[in-house]
Amino acid sequence: MEHKRILLTVSYDGTAYCGWQHQENGPSIQDELEKALEKALGAFTRVTGASRTDAGVHALGQRAHFDTVSAIPPEKYPFVLNRFLPEDIRVTEGMRVADGFHARFQAAGKWYTYRIHNAPHASAILRHCTAHVPVPLQVESMRACGRALLGTHDFAAFAAAGGQAKTTVRTIDAFSVEQAGEEITLRVHGDGFLYNMVRIIAGTLIDVGHGKLDTGCMARAIESKNRLDLGVTAPACGLELTRVEYAFEREG
Image (cartoon, rainbow, N blue to C red):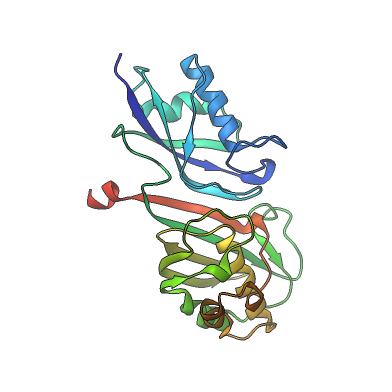
């Protein structure tokens, strides 16, 4: 039987999970995918994810690979696995990749989205997918502050304790803050992100929008490499891993 490596695209509401990666203290997205694969393939199958999202963080385009000798066509895996997955996890795409491909180490870029519900009262409907901020935010100040992220920098100040990155240098090539009614949406694209980096960016921008921090704080933090120059870490519920990209997709 022919060995195959399959790449999945996975979306999930992370509210009920301890994060992507298997942990002893609660259910994870990885656990649920591996249970679904065992039911579909008849044997335990390890899944390797592109990004280790934290507890409560969501994904629209997480990517993960696994190896199999099954004859199931790669494009059929969404239909097969979704039968066995809980409603808050869905596989949306399956494709075959080279045997040496690695979902995490070969990621060429990632898009993250952070959503803020900026209204006096919290939303009963949006509470799991936005961070509620009751005080009006100055969006232009947030934009001005965030422009300092663009380019290649040492983002040591933007990493929470517990990260295992070998280097804190990253390249951010797109950043935006948009407002539509009561929703403020932050989007950022880069070649990689440090542990809690996007939530630290979002929390800092919220503090800038409040007037608690000035618009130069991110530029200073890049220079100083001091976490204390930045704001609080924003809640996990507002964060979405929107897309993980690979070089072969860009070339195609």
